[in-house]
Length: 86
Image (cartoon, rainbow, N blue to C red; front, side, top):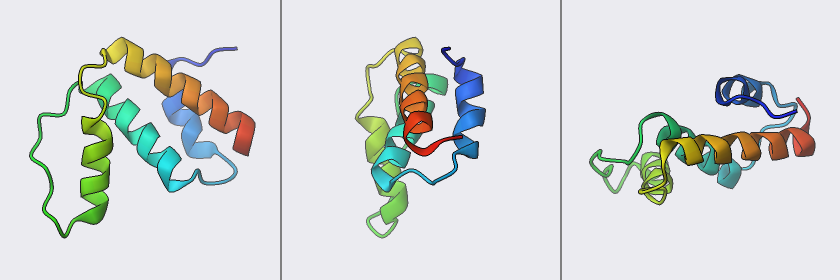
């Protein structure tokens, strides 16, 4: 069964184990690209390490269509459900 984007976004919050930081960054980037589109925000300052990592992850998705980002997000969530359980 393939989840919808909205279902995937809700389900990822119920994983039995928290995904790794890399997985969380991928989720964040695909979610932002799938909902907002290309990153046009200013890059966070050098002392905002978490914000900078999130910004960079999202910025790497630049040019990816929203629909494709949503499909990739759903696929990643389904992988994480298989890996961690929901």
